[in-house]
Length: 359
Length: 271
Image (tube, rainbow over all chains, first blue to last red; front, side, top):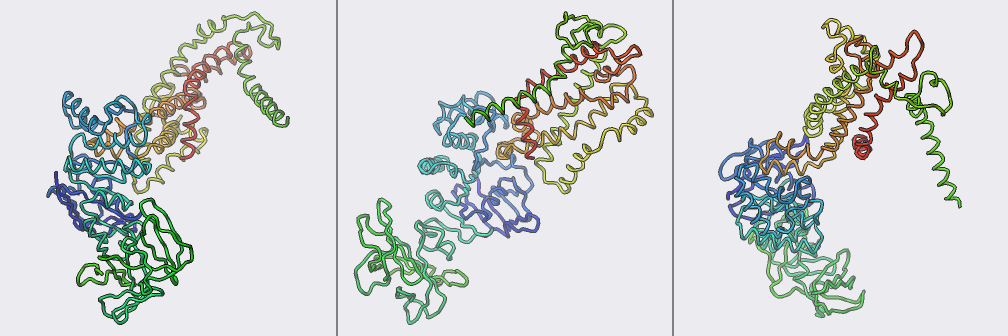
């Protein structure tokens, strides 16, 4: 086990700067998720840790040792690839055995460890098959087994669940979490799925255009997004973001007025999550508009209203019913968080307290 | 009804084309079993004989020596060209080196040069080196002709292999060469086998260089055929028997690789 330090890492492809000056420390035993939209540099960053991509400048340290110039095989890492990267001409057993074979583990120990690992990921019945005879989920397990068979000091996972169907993804997610708990190996995990990031991570690094926008625990990223990008990226459905201005201690936009504890200013974005709003009949509700859509998700109903140019969504009870275009009022729930952002820069406004304002 | 007609039309066309293509070959096979007096007859009514095959292997024709020359030249060429080309193809496929595209074009461009243009320089070079009429000379020339083509072909196969497995192997602890041995070669094996056989066929059928560079000792089968044009006229039945000896091994190989072959050509074609 080991920690990973990226110091002023930079990656250029020709003139294109993919990752500028990145600094990141991944603690020993941590499950760090690199989260961001495609092309944000998260996979490049991971591949630089793996040694599959050369770094243009900066230093990478694993367990305190600089490993910039070491080939992947000498970094004591294991990686799970998005497309599994299995060896199609080898059986499942040979696939799992390959890392041990390369490291000169003796035959008896290899047989035992392959067996143990296969049992851990429930592959023992499939050991003599070839990858082409397996389903997507089974292939994913083989890739996982191959990674854990030799207990490396760091796991790298590059969108390992993205090729699985939705149901299997949830199952495998729980398995990954359990596995990390069991092995306690430092893990770096790349994904663009915010749900995966929230559920798996000890900490999430949200990346955009090669930069880390926010690095924090899932809880804090959810409750205190550092800027508009993070606020819009995390949460499903995503946070309501309403353009407006603050005057006299009240945030105002068409159909929206929230009392806020901030000095007057223009160009403000107010953010509030759908789960922090509830449907009300109060005539003086902070959000007033016309009902635009009702979406039943099963455990709740997503209620969207329109006011001026804005749509605002609230999570209401599953049995909520109303007519489209009927007047609709939202009030914040007790303890709801209201977030304020500066429109031009996107930064969080209540930086003084670094906390969402609780109503 | 209309579809029916199209179906029959299609079949008829296929048969017609096959007849046109296969007729000379079929005629050669027939002639190989004819006696000299039947060779010019158009009748299919003749008593077949194996005498021609006995004659071509006996003095003065000694087809056996030519078979041996052809086998040695083609085999050694394949054994050298394919491993070299595999490594080159891997490098061209995987390493992003400055000037890579230009270099690859340069190698391929050798294929645009007509053989007649370079046969004379080759002749002069080998004369200076005292290598005229040797198998070594033929092997060297064939390597120069065949290797670029095989590099191009194998590169097509390697390009089609996703890099994921290779990267996984490198992380699992393999060096680059180990990756090539354990992962790339087994995955590219059908393609490499196809390329090998293709390379063998090219070398086996090579005529121009063998004609110019050999005289007596290193004569290969295609050149040997010419010797059946004598002062006594063209000995068609012997020439056909020798022709059968040349074609049969190629037929067998083509049959063996037929399945991979089309895949190989398309894999190469799409780059």
